[in-house]
Image (tube, rainbow, N blue to C red; front, side, top):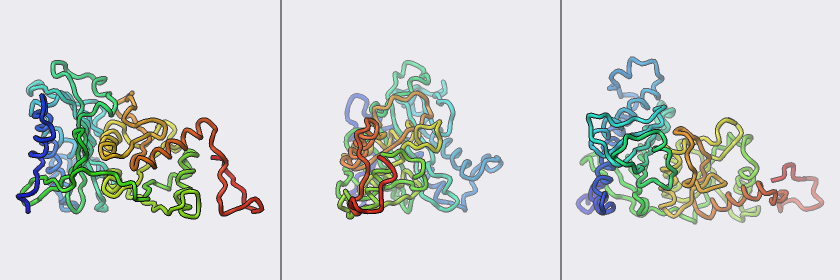
Length: 356
């Protein structure tokens, strides 16, 4: 069976043929090697004791894991002559490739261990990453990292679950690989992933409902009402608590993931970090035929203003995301109508309390 499987290395050689395809392929293989090391580390769970100096730190256990995962990516990817710099959710400033190593034509953005706050309950963890181009002749400055998502040349995530999966794109579709722990190879198991239009599933954290904007309230209320209201079909509402795991479910099964703008933290426009989480996931979703939005604009068109900028994120089936965008437009222009459920007629004692 394994002889018929395509390995990650072979797949990337075919996908990246071109003038600089070999260097991009080699970089993604280095990233995959770091992911294997993180997978081995996280698989130990409470048995893991090989944390070196991190054992003596005052950080809580999940922060130790974050720090060690971050160090793993840096060490695996800094020396190959493929990168000019890296930026991580764990580091305030970009990491420039040391002068002792050759400088390469790419920048790597990554969140080394998403969801680590759930590590103590054996929750699902993930790693997200994206690759940007850079002129190897120049030492990168902060502004070189502030590229919109549409400038990404590759993006992906790893999901550390019952099996370790690597899902990536180099701009030619979205493809999933599963780590064979016996051989140490990532093998192609989910070629040409496509976001299904036929699954009525919504992923949103309803504990934040009181902080939502009206267009989000409108959409979720219609989904809850299901076949008895304007949507004429029932929806399932789920929340795993791990963005990578939730988006992976959307990629494989269809539906919509929402982490919308809310008023809980007024200083943040959203919750996900634009460059380390939202942009890589947005590219994967759109390469799989879905749509990625802030609710008011294409997520991949957002111009970053700071390295750790946060953003609203709505990802999934194109038709549903477009509907949510329309609800935002209706609200912003005042063209939306008061909500009246077909369950109640004009003689009902019930009246809508909120105009959406």
